[in-house]
Image (cartoon, rainbow, N blue to C red; front, side):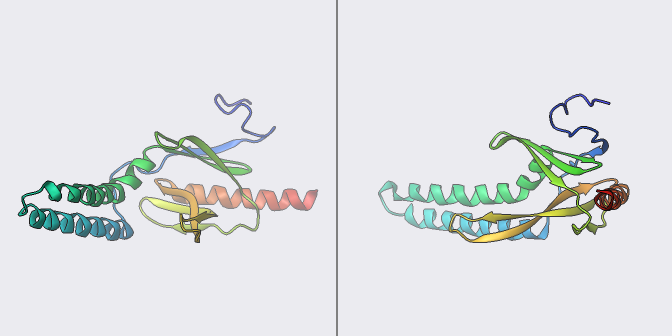
Length: 180
């Protein structure tokens, strides 16, 4: 059966087993607090610098506005960024692959596909909400350094059900591999 909106995306015979979205509520992780703290210190130092520079007759203090803005921007990005990203994310699990779709103003619409092979490691982090990781992505910083981030279905309500479905897809893939 055809699924509206998935024409040309699903392989012939591929079936959707589950669709969902991450928890939409505001949430801050410990790592986010570190970034926000750094932004507050940065902005606070800029305010201190502007107050000291304002004692001079020249409008030299205005150069501190750039640093203040960067600090405040860091605070908002690290605190609100992950929640806003989750609000623009959709998940789909088929009998062969997992999809993560995003639609953001900065990056546009993206659909990432991750095959569910029998040998991939699935990590389950019990919540609520629950998180499942089934892929890894290597990213590169502006300075050329690489780091790896886990990917999957973050902060979902029915994690136990989706974990069982992922394990079933793995078993089915193993059987399919043996039969071919």
